[in-house]
Image (cartoon, rainbow, N blue to C red):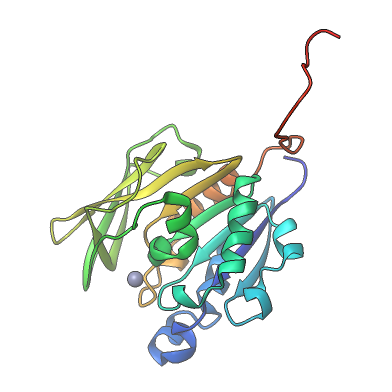
Length: 241
Ligand code: ZN
């Protein structure tokens, strides 16, 4: 793609302001760490937006200038306005990519796009996680080995109440014995959606070079293709006169 991909990293940005421990891990916020990882990669421009900004930082203008939106939320899903969820949903159906990160499995926008509860099992106990690549030809795993090991992460376990993914890219194993579908791709309208599991707020996961590589790859994968806007409704034949 000739033009840079325009990514917007959205974060509810509450843990970092309410916990010294988490602020020490993410001094620029989780969004700041994710944005810094994307800025390391060529061909991506990055802006950030947070819950407490007007319109949660996601005005129509911002969304119109966003090719791929990354979404991190956890404790304040209910504070995200339904108007903004509607606006993001419409943009995804029109072709904007969406990366749903970690506890955003329970965000309004992901539940709306999936149509299921998106519920799961969890445990905060310093489990190790190994993310196994199960789609070795997929662009999201370019440059990634057979697996990624994270020495400490929150555990998420099956059953994860999501629709069958179009492509499952990662399956995670945890030291407690659980497994989890940790990288899942979907098409929704003209848009592409990728759910990516790691990224609990008490661990420095978004500084991990392999996790950063996956996020950059996923931004490139989810970016819209250049096509005319879709048209609907009553129509004349395109063949004949
Ligand atoms: Zn978490």
